[in-house]
Image (cartoon, rainbow, N blue to C red; front, side, top):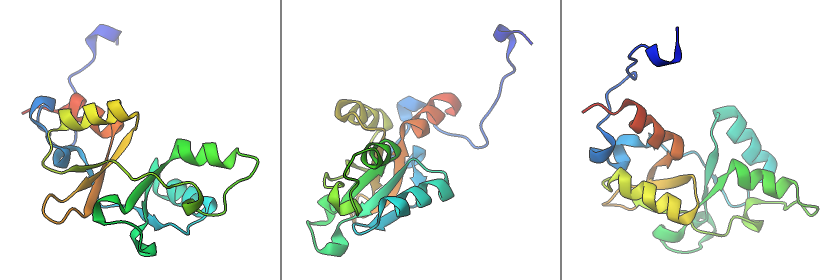
Length: 152
């Protein structure tokens, strides 16, 4: 088969077109998280076991911050950066101090993508607009899925 004659392929479920998609349409529901006392080994095992590229860190368990700032993200690149340091940190709390970028599930996916680009991140935490609690994660790959399979 030549490159120009690829068959039409459809995703396993319908997604709205990128221009009409929200964060809720693209996100992976559920949040894989750890507390701030988790070790790099704990994080690496979670990522490897669940085949994910980020883990949400719950700083609230230590009584730090309000709901909007109590969550952080550790990406696979953060994990690599930290494990290559000569003084490898003992726990996530030793380096995961920056709050995660949080978006509401009702936000336009295009706006979330712009926010990700402007902040140089590949994952954001999706929050319920009423409770502000994390309910999912959106990655650049999730956005690529909407671009690829969005049909409505």
